[in-house]
Length: 108
Picture 1 (cartoon, rainbow, N blue to C red):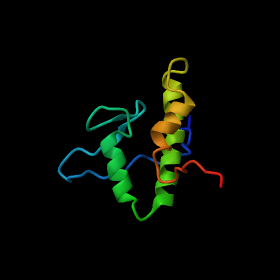
Picture 2 (tube, helix red, strand yellow):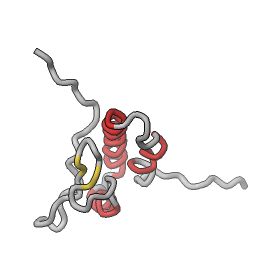
Picture 3 (cartoon, rainbow, N blue to C red):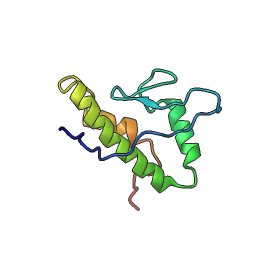
């Protein structure tokens, strides 16, 4: 009997569908394309909805995005280990747009 390998990151269940009767902007795994629009996930609409949904909980959004970055890196590398996106590209796609971007520090 073979047991499944446990995953370390969260299951992508956000953002919620908006409007509620429309298809949610969630990823199709393991391709990490948006179910609603077919663009690389998180698409622009998913980013807007995630920022609105987590507006009062920016730390939760940062943790959620970091976990999904881990999951996507794992999935996409297994699909295409030679020509897939680089870790930097995936970081920019999943995490860098999130709530904790720091600006350039200016010397006084």
